[in-house]
Length: 92
Length: 390
View 1 (cartoon, each protein chain N blue to C red):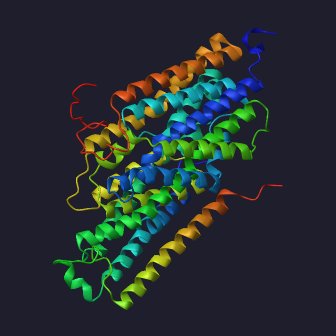
View 2 (view 1 turned 90 degrees about the vertical axis):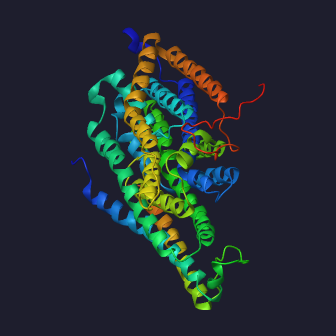
View 3 (view 1 turned 90 degrees about the horizontal axis):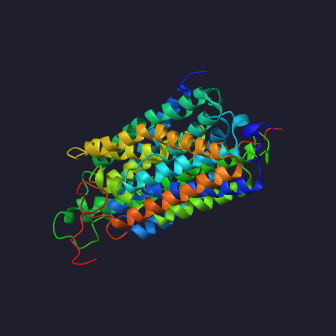
């Protein structure tokens, strides 16, 4: 019996960093890709487009979609794992 | 028939009272903690206050069904269930609710979990002495996580904040704000879900404890379905009511938050809470959320963390377990002196009176969805433009 469960601790730190900081970072990369393109130059000046969020580059939009999909898939997988761990099969 | 022991406390009437009180605790847990999930989204205006609390309530409901690991810890990991009576559970709940309401009145985001655990432990100590408390479980499953979790959350949030600003530095401020506000809605939803998996479980654990004490279910049992459902509904209703005072402290008091920081803080909270829930740690979602928000201030150059506000919270955290334990022990003592069912009833009547008093006090300095985002002036309640006559 130990006071600190070290194996749980390192898992929480590592997976916490991956999910808690890594996923938002991928989301940010999505935003970055989305903003690439011809319209990005106008962003500094009088930009009429809503906040200049979409740059207009096709590749950028495709990469952004990929990033957002990765984030959503990771969240779905995470929720499934939590459900699985939280409902152990009843001991016979 | 020998002394007080002979007075029957184990009956359906008391059990019903205890279950109602437990659901009352769950309700206070909900509104005390709305801010953990939604404070930053409300502060950055990613969500309107009303939509935020509605969404959070709904997701707490879902989250309550998602994992049952924490309920098991509370029901059997902290006290010797053979020595726990219904009176002990009632007194413990009285301790937890009282502490939750007092801290809410002052807008301090203290831990509902520690309030509940403190109350139950205090009452158990008063009833059966130190050997009835599983000290090892208490330290390894409650105290150690309480110290470590805010630090881990702050680390994750600071890393996330740094990454988000780094990656998005070529975006204009407006584009960045817009993009991350959308992301924040997602991350805030995850925190609400995580809150359901952790906090709703605690009341389930306590009701299960009461059912075990009353021998309605066998020792070591899992929470029956009606317990899961009623706890899920109670915490969700409490969340929907919205603890505006605490939301204000978290969203405006600690750090002036921008959307990327909000998203980083919420993602860190959600990840740490969900991971810990899975391991059965009943950590405080409040401690995690606060750690994350401070981390989001540390991760951004030039951001200011109001350490005096953080210090006041940390002080409240240290006092939460012992204070709730004292109230719990006192409530048990009173119920024991009066004895039997009457003792429990008197305890709960006092609890209702105290709750009503605190509620009336809170009306004097009202914080609601209208003024929750007002400029921080050093206290939970915004400075009012002196009303002419009221």
